[in-house]
Length: 312
Image (cartoon, rainbow, N blue to C red):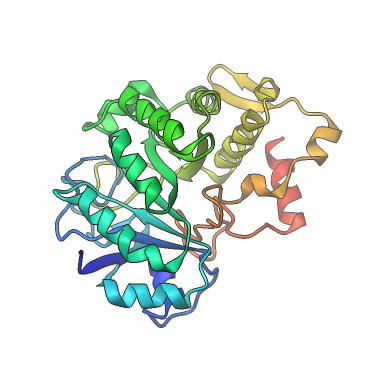
């Protein structure tokens, strides 16, 4: 059984493991497998990558300090969480650690999501038997032409095949395909990725690229908020089968061909965090005080309407 587990900073506050103020309370407990070294993979954007010089406690812009597992289990009982989301990095024995942690979580009666690199169907079946109901699939790069450059240890089709296996085991909508906006992909590639995910029965959770000092992509700029909002709306339109309403100029989104009635029906959830049930992922991509790429709570109506006017 692992002695330690990493906990996202906000989750640790909600558990009472750290004393600090919460601007938005996480509704999911975000945990990560503990390993004293770096991930064996070398994703260009990731602080945990084997060639990264970034702080080992970071994932995206969030700090994930380590705690004794027994303290984390006690904190989970106090945190009033809707689910557990277990992130993984690759290292020898990682899958065995995941099974041990699932066993440790079993008495909590919380639904569990696991984000993991491709594993076989037998492992997925064992996850399901131990209370896992959603799997996070790290496609990350929405461009096949850029995939190997950014994620050199995996292949594009390998990840899509894994998403298909997840759907075979868990059912449609239970594979959460993670996609990072701002890695050099085109809008057309993003939309095609959303369409392919819908067609195989996967859901999509998008993140804004966050440059982390010490990673290979530390000098890349994050996407503008306006551009990210266009991608959020495009993802929503694909999800309801209205991708024909996305207007392109070449391979970039120019606008949206929507009637006033269709605009009025756009839900505020379009600009909120989209993930497993109970996930709000506050301030994962941005610092507090800035307008978030993904709202952890429903935005005010005036903010929502202002954003729509900006991108329509």
